[in-house]
Length: 402
Figure 1: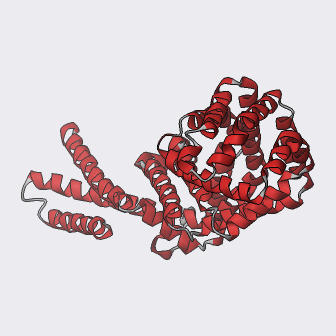
Figure 2: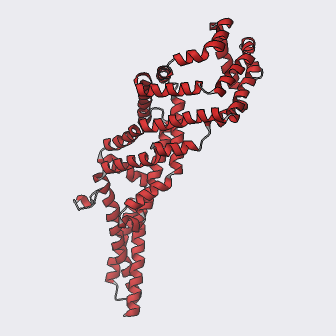
Figure 3: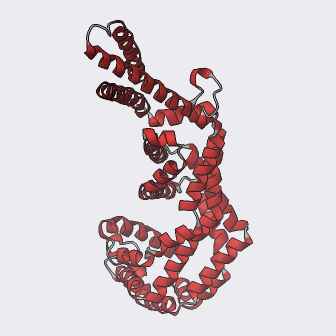
């Protein structure tokens, strides 16, 4: 497309020279000359505008050219601030989470697992069998009936969760979590494309708005972000995924060593244990399911079709029908999401900013120019043709008015 745009400009120059030589032969040649002359002006002007975005035209240090390389760090900070202000602030996350009813969704799935029932049945069967083999019936029953609440209160969950996450990362069992985050990021970008367009339009100069390049740039920026997310989804070794893993590792460390986060987990645990609905549910489930668990642990097909399956369905119905328990769970999920945005949002923003700042000017220029692609050269082609049409129009008006 560069060759096409440049070739069209050269063609207009050749037509202009030829028309200038034979202008006296026929009045119509004057229109050809006017078209080619104005087309050269339009083509050269748009070539300068397009080139000035990414580099100095003809390598001359003309003021207000090479805009993107000169503003690389500002672009990085602006993009990072956009992500922070529109996606990662606690207020935005809280509003988004306010619409979600996690407890009801979990309750519906437990009440009717659907296609996942077979896999869930086999997994729970193996887990229950292993637990029952390691603990005798009397000890397990006594612990579950008389001391569960006391032991849970004495048990600090945060370090256990931190070590579990640390172990999962060490064994690469955290990948589904990252995949889910990437899918969530894709949906967030899709829902907020208009904000990117508005930001580019507001910050674009008058030349960019007149040529329509601001809309082209916004489309290509969105396409670039979509491609970045797609690359992260496809490439398990993507650098941004590595940074995300660093964040998870930091979170696992904080759960084990940060007193404030450990206190938050303990507060939620105690709040959940104090909920009367949870206590009533647990006692009823244990009394109805204790004997059945010992009989059907080695029969996965019967595990969820018998009393334990009824217990799980009862739990699902309780989550859907008990507003207090559902609100406790939903409140915890909201607080966890808002806390994550508050604690790690700035880290994600710095990741984006530092990554772009770490690129050299040539890399930033090349990636943005390739992302915008052929449309940049179409701007030159359109400028050449539109300039020619303007020239013909002015020539015709000159003839009429003259």
